[in-house]
Image 1 (cartoon, helix red, strand yellow):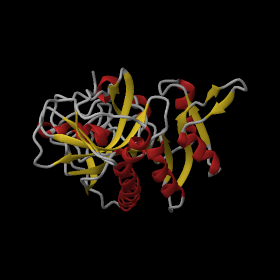
Image 2 (cartoon, helix red, strand yellow):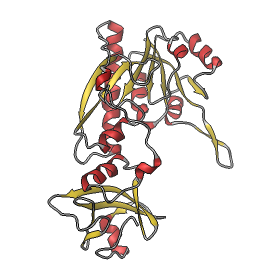
Image 3 (cartoon, one colour):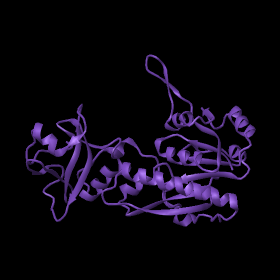
Image 4 (cartoon, helix red, strand yellow):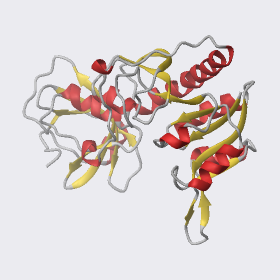
Length: 309
């Protein structure tokens, strides 16, 4: 089939690469227009824009999906299908262009976690299972008929980075199976049950800040959801301290939230509203990311010191 691929971030690259290597023809790639950066005004392309150039694919930079010249370019390509991964909301007129329709890859088991941040919300909620879904796009966000789904186990040590990588790989394979089934007519589209729907809205900056009055488990999930980037944070001596890796200490009772409750040569834990959290990787203000053990070799902490005040 003749496919136009649409996407922006790193997480979409695996699917574009898989499509390029498949029997389907990627006739063009759509991504955000490059921005001029630095004194030399060097053009900075999105990860998908860069990959399209590396693969020598036709590339259409798009400032706005409402632009009529953009619509005309896509119509002139006579695509069978749009394949969309982590892109923008497509208007109704744009969805009418491909002969078959537009298929999206979403990082959840729809109708659960409709919205911009399904992976982060699955981790924030401590889910032990998530998944991926391909579905036909309609004007409303993430509500279209489901084509294929696949479950993915969330391991206890998973963070946003590790879970995203597995979702990228399995999602690319699921998209190829979806296109093959569309082409041979064996796919069955199933309407979503709106009564089972939940939302995964865009992450707000204030969600990165740790509240030590919360349970150790909830804070641990927050750290996982925002690691490796941008990092959940707290404060130490009025300076920002990012935390990237942690572990709930089982059976430990809180001794007052937001205080250093365990301090050894290579270990440190912080008391929470319920339980204690051992810290393994941090980044002090103006410093590189490092292990807690390495930090303790050069930074002075004291048992009972307040964190987050």
